[in-house]
Image (cartoon, rainbow over all chains, first blue to last red; front, side, top):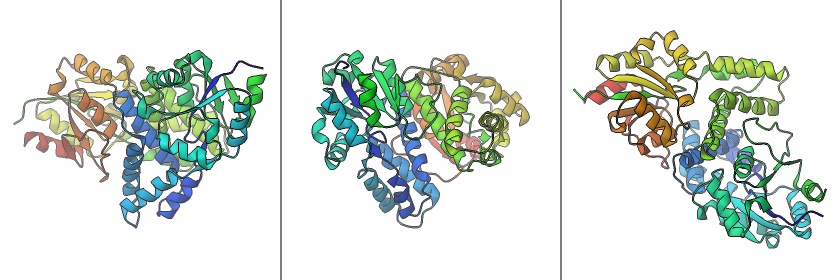
Length: 223
Length: 223
């Protein structure tokens, strides 16, 4: 049995299944594929602000990038209404099917579970409550309370301080290679969930653990 | 007549027309629309590295992000060949039609013209030589020689030092709001080329000048 860790979960797309966003775009008259471009765009712009020393709320960037993209598509209906509908869909996602069992097994193994999101704490809470696993998490953290967004080092250091742990006693779990990179640079161990058989970009630091679903993490840690 | 400025041009998409990239994706069996996702993804990942204090060559990020995206598409042919073909298309773009006349008029008005790209200097040179306006530029600069990618402040400070100018005597010209933001934070004046009638994201600093094409900049500066 391994030592107990502070396991830090990314939230958007790591815990939440973003697939329904394609349908939300279709419902406002935009291409389904715009969902992926939107998420890449909002992170690009959020990271640009981070790189220039600034920080704004995730929802501000998400809604602003959405307005720019939907405006350029020339959708038929009212733009404000379309932005609100897609934002509502983003705030009402569900957990990936592998998450509840994985989280329960990690908690049962004695690990301390926390979240660290670039988004809003309130959305993490809503997602976990709806999925019936809120009680397994000791802390829900957000860069709302940190000096900078992930993957800046200060975001992970904030999480370490909030959890009262040294980074070396923490494991970041994420689907996003940029998050793995930032966490590794900050001294955390890392686990990359690769649900889709994706290639890991060579320009980011490699994860310590690669798993196809969260349910594979407890045995990987116990091994 | 306004005082002469050091006019700093972004290169990718500001000077070069990226529209042919859609055709390059189609030729390797991928959706044309993947071109936009690729460019957003490579900037997202380059900015993530910047935010975490790292820097890698643009071509490394571009090719790596392309490999991940094309691999996920499950294209029919050889992945290495497909990556090479799209990268070759990226390195053989042409100037937007409004650029040569705009550049010549700005040079004729006595401004000093330089470029500052997150990409390779060699590609800026190739693009401007092929477009017949290389001789109008005093310096071709790249973050290859700076501490960080744009929009980090250090990139603009590098350009100011290289041009021997104070940031307040410089004007950044770009199509990308994130570049306008970073330059404005570093103390440069800014001009946003909006060729497509796009909405400017409210979370970035506003440009000082908005023009629909580069040919509109000389009269705007003389006014």
